[in-house]
Length: 107
Image (cartoon, rainbow, N blue to C red):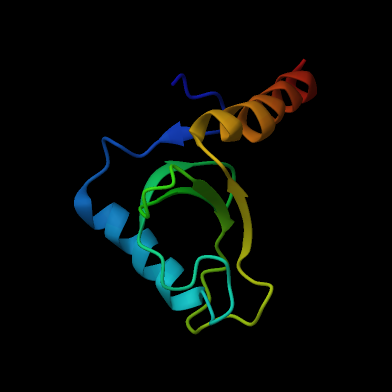
């Protein structure tokens, strides 16, 4: 997949980088949240505090999470999360539109 600004792959980042985001997500997600208790892997970053996680439950789903960087568990509905059925759906419905909007504001 081609990554489009403002999104970028975290594949080349060190293990500690990935662990920091995974641990922060686990800290923030309260019971009842769509990601509570699910194994995840950071695969991309967007603008600000947006992070893209692969959900490692065999479904192929990915989740865009707007981390708050709170030092304790959040209360629902936080952290803000959008689930996509696969990486292609994320590309079409989130990454490409954000990229087009960014290009238009820079023109």
